[in-house]
Image 1 (cartoon, helix red, strand yellow):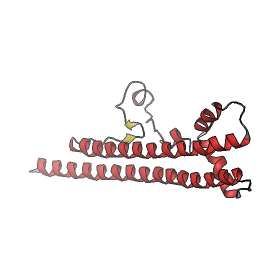
Image 2 (tube, rainbow, N blue to C red):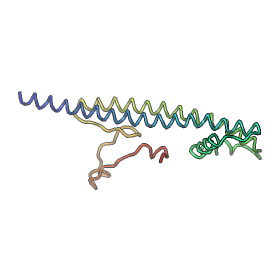
Image 3 (cartoon, helix red, strand yellow):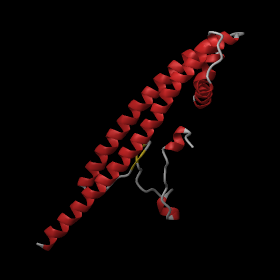
Image 4 (cartoon, rainbow, N blue to C red):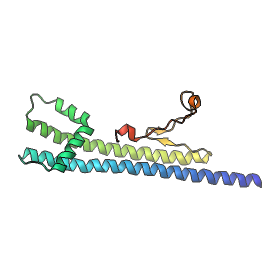
Length: 170
């Protein structure tokens, strides 16, 4: 009888911990979705700035700032596309940057799909592991790895991975 009560208490504790960890993962996913949605809004403003430049008008300051932020954040896309131009004019660069913003939009869509897939797999693994009485804490790169001699056992410090470090978000 006591064994059954102890086992039930242990299962309820594990389920509560699993629900807490699932909530943490949901909050992380929502925060990252917000960041991607913000970038999507910046793309609209940046395209407006480039259109104004190409039409000979002065872009609004907020549109110009959005363009500069995206150009800095996704510089690998802009640099790759602009490097293919031979002796470009200003209009050529702006036209290529406009097309680069389309690629940035596709990149963001791909990242959102990947984020959802990672979130789904994380939640699935959290609940699956809770059935065994263990709560696995997922990271942005997948599930946390088991303890190895190179991390937790050596210095008794837990390695903490912040997924926002991968994205370059301050």
